[in-house]
Image (cartoon, rainbow, N blue to C red; front, side, top):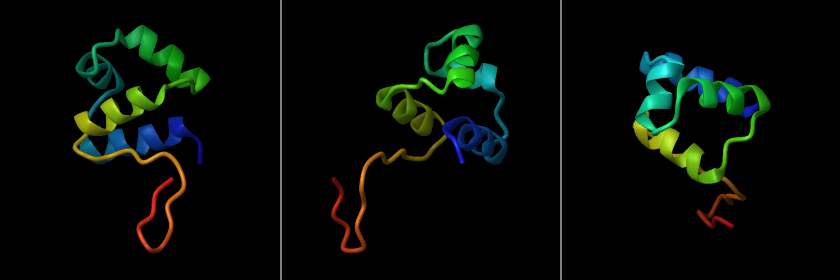
Length: 69
């Protein structure tokens, strides 16, 4: 599953539109849509998206003992 699909699922889960999310993270809907199509969101942008949606975004390795790299 790619990042655009994950964002779509999170938006559906929270009942929010892409345009509303874009504005909430300080981005124009047009710019958001371009990043969405190219899948070029930065780590910071993904963390902002998660925060607006009330979740967290974890990027990296995570091990059963809780270690994150």
